[in-house]
Amino acid sequence: MLESRKLQKVGRSTITVSLPNKWIRENSIKPGDLVFIMQEKGGALRIVPSKFFRQEEIEEEYVVNADLCDEPGMLERIIVGGYILGCNLIRIISRNRIEKTHIDEVRRITRKLIGLGILEETSNNILLHCSLDPTKFKIDMLIRRLSLIVSTILSEAMQSLIENNESLAKEAIERENEADTVYYLATRLIIHAQRKHELAEQIGLTDVLLIPAVRLILQSLELIGDYSEDIAKKVISLNIYRDRIQADIIKRIYEFSEAARTIFQKAIDCIFTGDIKIANSVLEMKNVLEAQAERLMSELPEIPYLRAIISGLNNIASIGAINANIAINKALHERSKHIENIIKVVRHVLPH
Image (tube, rainbow, N blue to C red; front, side):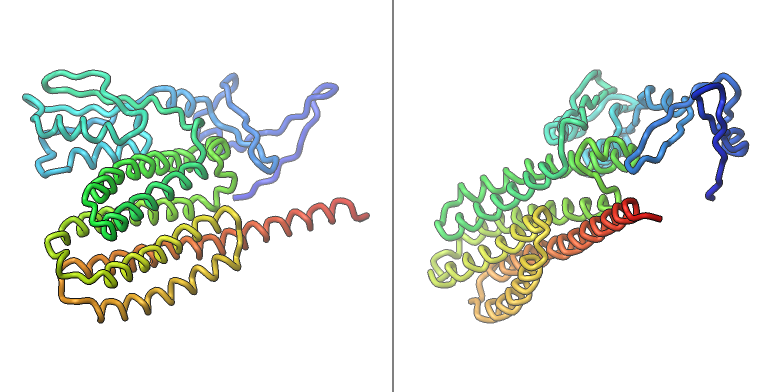
């Protein structure tokens, strides 16, 4: 509810404004209490009761009972969830002794989560602590980094296919862990920025309205990494049928993969350049590639994994093209903001 207040002059230069009684009661504020005033983008002021700052200084532990994590990967996923949600202290407990499988999960996942490490460890208790400084990272840099990693995974998987080099496919599979690391970090930062608007600006999210779009960009890239890893695994499985596949078939699949990779790379570039024309051409390219996929699928020999590889590549192109739509919407949003700013300037300089 919008409520107006008159400014009052006290003394020679001090100007004061009264606070709403309802807000004072809800926050249990009394005379002599301390409040914090923060200037936000656009000139607005935010008044925050001191109790919220005291609560933030006390780090609460996120406690996980390992005894209840009785399915493979469950503990690992819970730790990832806690990390992404911004927990700095994660404690894993057990009534008796933490099982070796759980210890292995903890050690495996901490290697993927930047800033998270084991602070304490006993037979029935493990304390994880995150010492990450979020202001050291920029979201744009993380998006570009993730895009480069997943592009490399796909490239290595397809080079493995065309060169019949299994070691390249294995390298691609191992590289997917690096993609997960960047994705988890960036997602943690975004969620943290939604709670603290001052952090949003520090990490490069100057427009909070675009935060959902950034989250979608990251999810699309992470999914492309998953599809690329799966393709690398299928390339390895395909080796036993290699002598039944003609060279021109391998070449056509490789060329198809290069087109799919171009689509998602150009879409990401458009997000930063704001080039609507190129973003539109990416969407048209995706439509052409879908028709090529149908034709190629119908012409492939009946050999296991070949059609699955084409399907995965087609999915990569479709997911990557989502970012072209985001690029168009982002560019239009930023141009409309620019026009609004021009109108404000004109209104300010014109005589009333």
